[in-house]
Length: 463
Image (cartoon, rainbow, N blue to C red; front, top):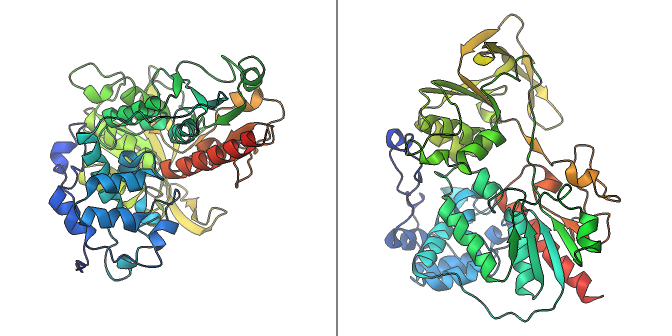
């Protein structure tokens, strides 16, 4: 019998004033009893709107039905038919704007906690199983994947299972892409990401780190000298945008990309056990209102900052971050300075001392559909600071487009593709994820990786 409670089963969390001083996960996950109770809230709709709302089409009612019956291993097998990274997606996907947004239970209460159940299933499986080594019949055809983030990992895994010899080329010293360097430990533990990477290696995928495609080797050389039959570009959007204001080059100003990479790959999350590779100080401002801004602000708090501000030029309703991330940030003591726009970074002896802002009001919607911020003349004020983190967006690194003749790109740098196949204008080259869309979600990147893998397979089968 369905559980008709209008509310989700709450997920246990660390207390805010405890968790904002450690890098352990905020949400602790469901117990088996809680997961079964939540799973019984699913009505097993015939129309299955949640599946259509999932970018990788996970058969959601089926896996939830198995959870309700206590068949957790079978639930995992159902999920992983379509989603190669369920433990990751269960933690970082914006379910509230995807599968849960269209859940029928959400019409008269809260949607079924699909993400929490996916996380529970994945965690339960990993606690009791090691990555499997399936028997795969090799085709003897080589495919290269550029980037080991969610798009690259997904594409590589799909192709490896089909028998292709897949090599991933990763620019950094550790694979995982944004899952490793961009998302903080308290939202996505690095050991969990490593487990997912190990499962890809079990499929026979080779991962080569410290190779910058476009500098260490070009895409043309991958074809002509290394013998790859196809290339998938999933190199993400790692080129940060800046404010272009006076003082932005002072010491103590970071892009969010650099700040989080130093915190994650250089293990600032182990602070205070080891020295932190970022200078934080007592007062920090993070400029921006998206998920990356929330991650940077909450990381700064955990690294010892006494006061952390989110400075955003629009209002509460326009914040692009997930509601859950904003809620957690507020609980942890992050101070929101909304309707404020930075105009100058103040400094002394080469170091940041403050951030000058202007108050804003909101006018008519702009091209993005959000109300356009308008400055209030004479409203300038200065926040005294030690550190400024700029989190206003990223674009693709230009190296690949600059070194790949015949590859068409957008003016802002994104690679142009056929959305049905992810094929680019260059023969044999496919692309997906943030390098195509700009900074987006993990699950959308995974969907692109799946689409590209299917198209690559179909094209190579016809040769």
